[in-house]
Structures are given as C-alpha cells and as structure tokens.
Length: 194
View 1 (cartoon, rainbow, N blue to C red):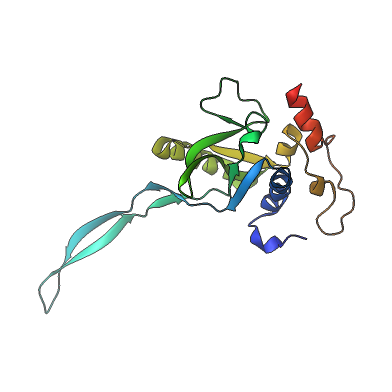
View 2 (cartoon, rainbow, N blue to C red; view 1 turned 180 degrees about the vertical axis):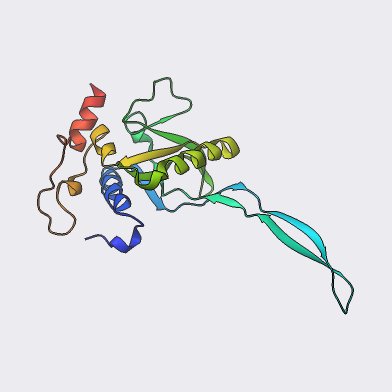
C-alpha cells in the first residue's frame, strides 16, 4: 500500500496509480513530485530614507512586490518507447490528440530528456483554482518556453486508460463505481497502434 502522506491531494495519489503502471511497463523512467519551481517574477524592493531622532537618518529597504514562483505537481521523465503513445513533442509531425501529453525537451541529471510537467486538478473546479493555474501555465510558457499540462482526475483516465489500481477503492479495495467504461492499458495501446 502506498504512503498517502507523500501526496498533497487524493488526485496526486490517483495519478500515481497511472504513472506507477507506466513505470512498471517501461514507458516512464522517473516521476518527480513537486519538481523544481519556475521563477516567474522577481521581488521588487525600494530604498527610502528613514528619519531618525538621535542619530543620522538611515537607508531602509521595503518590499513592494514579493517574487512569484510556480511549482507544478508532477514531472514525468519519459522513456523513448512512450513517444506517440503517451507523449508528443514540439517536433512531432502529428496532431496532438486528447490522450497525448506534451513533452518538453529539457535538462535532467546532466542529459537532455523529454519530460512532461503536470498540474493536477480535480474534474470539479473547487474555488476557481483552475483559472489561477491556467494563468501560471501561460506565464511559465512565456518566461521559460515550457508547456505545462493541466490534468483533471479522473477525467484524464477516460482519455487514456484507467490504472488497474484505480479500479478498486483506496481503503477497502472494493470495486470502484465509475461513471464511464474503463479501458485497460493494453486496450489503450492497441487502439493507438491500429
């Protein structure tokens, strides 16, 4: 059983079932939770003179705007065999389909790899958090040239495959009631290769 305390949300836990299955099948090399943050804006500081009563006036610094950083939920380092099945790149000649994730070419451990950065959200948008994430995603692309994928769980499983572990509930392992007909990994791969 997975250590649920490693995850910030139930969506991260459920998405880990998907990535775990792809690691086992050799499509994913590594998954990193809370990857290195993207710096989107610097802190703005201003200097002013503070009058002093008994000593000389002194220079003081005041923060006008705090820096803004964005940390995604998951970074997937792909193995080559996943290309075209689970991820697509900027150089691909094919249209991005709903089951594809976009992979950025980026540095990882002194080598360049294809990796997908993911922002996880529930299918239901609680407190309009998707809007804020969308703004950060656009900002990351503008500043860093990386496309961040917003993945909504469990809707994402309908587009790709439903992980075997997700077919049963987290605690009792009873059959999970789904509002869609689940597709297994083998079925998903076969449908793409046809």
